[in-house]
Length: 177
Image 1 (cartoon, rainbow, N blue to C red):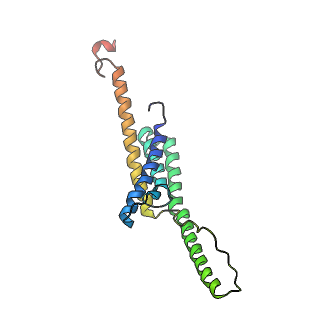
Image 2 (cartoon, rainbow, N blue to C red):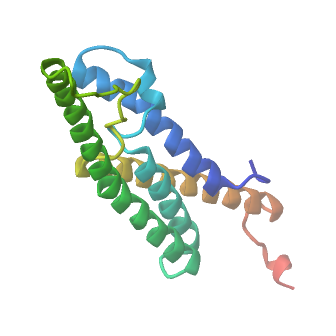
Image 3 (cartoon, rainbow, N blue to C red):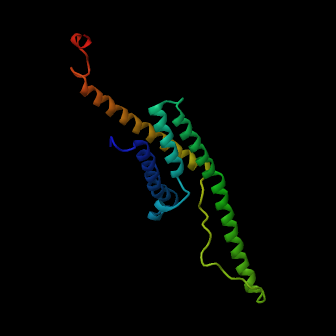
């Protein structure tokens, strides 16, 4: 993995694992397994939050909190998480209202034959965003994964440097001459 971008791998891995965890959390909440949850938006935990938090934590662990790359990752992550629990969640709530309104129009159109109403074939998708707890859970999971990935990479780098130095990483008096 030395030639690969571990930050990107960590972030995408966090997204994938969080999507898989949605199957488990759905089982706990609904009482049944639904493999389609791995391919949905919304739900617990937020994979968006997991991905951006993993990236920010990974960069901060490797570069330090004062580095420009850390600032970019944190700001980008904050925007994504705000959007996931704000705008996208509200869009889903509006979709639910529109779907309910369409159901009401169907009932009314049955009572008034002159009222023409054409039903859509497919309802609007309602589960688009996240509740704040889902964003928090995704962020906590992603942060943990990002820190662990950075620690593993740093440990591998330290071991590699020790192999290059004579005497198992310790210098003898003759090495200083």
